[in-house]
Amino acid sequence: MIKDFIDDTRIENILEQAKNPAPQRVREIITKALELKGLSPEEVAVLLQTEDDELIGMILQTAHKIKEDIYGNRLVLFAPLYIANLCANNCLYCGFRRDNKELNRVALTMEQIAREVQVLEREGHKRLLMLCGEHPTRSSLEYFMEAIETAYSVKTEKGGEIRRINVEIAPLEVAEYKELKKTGIGTVVLFQETYHHETYKTMHPSGPKKDFANRLTAMHRAQEGGVNDVGIGALFGLYDYKYEVMGLLLHALQLEQDCGVGPHTISIPRLEPAFNAPAAITPPHPVSDHDFKKLVAIIRMAVPYTGMILSTRETPEMRDEVFALGISQISAGSRTNPGGYQEDNSDAFRAAQFNLGDTRTLDEVILDITERGHIPSFCTACYRLGRTGKDFMDLAKPGLIQKFCQTNAVFSFKEYLLDYASPATRAAGDKLIRKMIDETFKTRRKKFVMDKLREIEDGRRDAYI
Ligand code: SAM
Ligand code: SF4
Image (cartoon, rainbow, N blue to C red; front, side):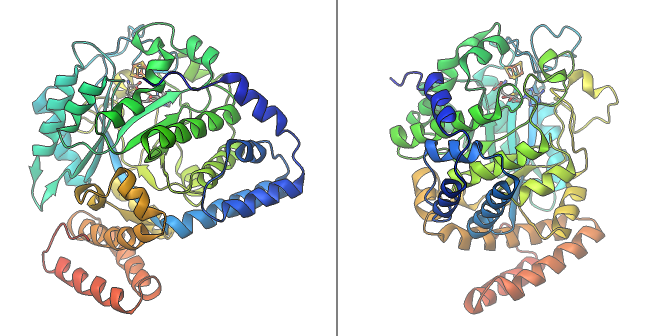
């Protein structure tokens, strides 16, 4: 059985030894990163300890190049679906914490969940991240699995349906992950929050989440239970960002070593203010925008093939800057209170997990990112065709995934434009697709894409390769 593999002293020593790096060493590591084979913990520490603005500029440019080479201009979109906010834990940064007696506690019924999903489908969403608090009876695994089945069963007009549900659920045992997998989920996501033991202990004073090692090893158990794609993350602001990046990297490497494949995604939330949550109101180690961009770039260079997820916690301006540095998935049009999609509820904050930096609708976000040259993707092809886990990485590494993903992004975006977009978004989207046909696709593929787009205009849906 896998044990706690995070050694605080080792991380501190690696970071200490990398202090004040020679510019030549930083340049060598930047050159190595361009080979797209990833970086070692020692090399990542050198980049983290780089404070020279010119070198940091080079780090950002390198990350941008890697993002373009591997992911192109695609951004995969999803919506979080909070189904319950009861929680037995007391995480000092979260509005759902047990001791927040003023929070309106809700566990949605299956009918309410179905109505939430209808709203999301009618906006055009195809991918959900389902989450809830950790509560033994009101958010049990059975309840969660029923919610997944309910969400998948909801169909709306124009072929509206959810095609992939990723889940963010408290740590489970191997047999439970096996059960969960049967519901047809995509990625199982779990954030360690902080990899620093002492900070972890302070931030999680009571409840099952107190157990650092149980949480750390959960993604190993998920893989053992047959979950092919797992996602990890750290909540930036709880402890030194350099330490947390090292923790994320060591976690990724450990998964790769023990399970044959590293994480499918890394999430990089920053602490947002939350209702009655002391650590969120005054973050112990706030991460500046400058450092945030730097850390996104370094993660992109360290694990080039791992998707990076950014949530609506960030403002539109900040989101735009970090998209270019390596983000491949974003949430849009989000609510963090259970039932929030159906209600126009001015008191929603009383049931919400944290405040949102970006409160725009899906259509507004899509218009904005399209005008900035990113192609929104609702694609779910890889997971439906079994291109997951190690198979996905084997395809991704020689660049093959780019071929599928770029094409599928265009198809799924065209379907969105026809079925759900406002006139302004449709015009901007069609312009971008025309540009991509001219510039991105070559001869045979160009013809194939154009033929398929015509079929989609004639009513074909769910086209993918
Ligand atoms: N309850 C489960 C858990 O803790 O893993 C599942 C989902 S929890 C609702 C999702 C994530 O929200 C947490 O892992 C945490 O990183 C993040 N979160 C909590 N409070 C936050 C805040 N104030 N700002 C930003 N993210 C926060
Ligand atoms: Fe509960 Fe998760 Fe919030 Fe902690 S972060 S209080 S476990 S919902």
